Length: 171
Image (tube, rainbow, N blue to C red):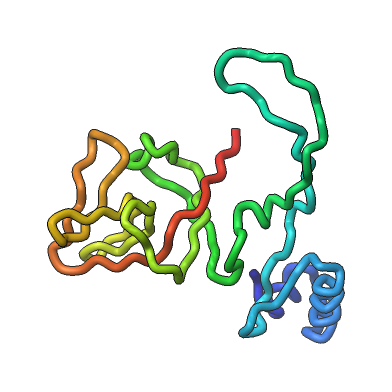
């Protein structure tokens, strides 16, 4: 989220006090929230969307529209820790067989301990990548989801920064 100074410049206000009033109003309306450090956090960007039923991805079948539930896209994509969640745009095709394509956005969460099998954002030997976290014979490594790429066994260092929680693709 932008700082108060950046908001002041973006909306053409002449004082940070005016920005503070705007921010307080947006917090009161539920559009924004503040984290433990006082930083601005978006809140429920999409509101509630109706869930109308199931759709066959196999053979066609009769379907009737029936309101099953409503859900917040934000709460669905980020069910836990909003402050530790961010998005990254995917570059490359090493995770294509996991359904993650170039140009997709991945929703990632910092903090929780990764488990073997998680798709992670990791720094390995000074470079960053997204791969499956694997372990074999006591050695941790990163495995792509594309047969054209080889697993990455760190020579010196492997640090997991975040776990992939979701993928967003726009058609």
